[in-house]
Length: 63
Image 1 (cartoon, rainbow, N blue to C red):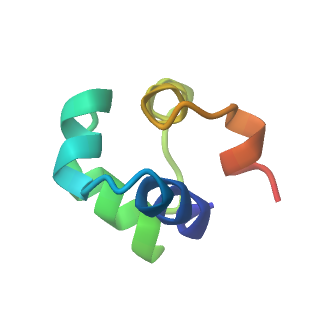
Image 2 (cartoon, rainbow, N blue to C red):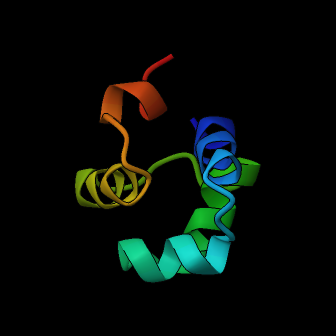
């Protein structure tokens, strides 16, 4: 999941800080999801990230 967040974020030329501001999800959580140290998060967080990345949840979070 995390590599897809990072891939989409980089595709949009967005930093973790910018994604954090746009999604209202802490940069620490975004970083943890991207590097795999955080493997579980809330549905609300997933929705916020997908919306901020202009993507469907299934595009980012389903294998």
